[in-house]
Image (cartoon, rainbow, N blue to C red):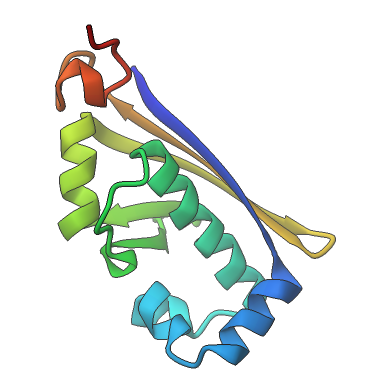
Length: 132
């Protein structure tokens, strides 16, 4: 069952300027393995992290270091979570992530689908149900 969908786009040039203006931002947003990547890949990974946050309802206190974009054995991008992001995912009932990344024409895009089990995780009010 789809628990949530998140999409985000990042203007690569603007993102690069922000990284230059704020020296600690790269370290705050990315794990060491991500930090060495080129700007286009960083922008796509930031878009993916934003999309993950949208799947989870943008939980307060989310640590960007608790979500990173790796590459699976087939060479496809994959989402890895721990700590604050793993806890938020568990509350929502997300057990599996699906990710698509793209960058072209100065824009990086990510689409994330959180997959889980119906009725698992948070109360209905946190998982898309209606409160009375």
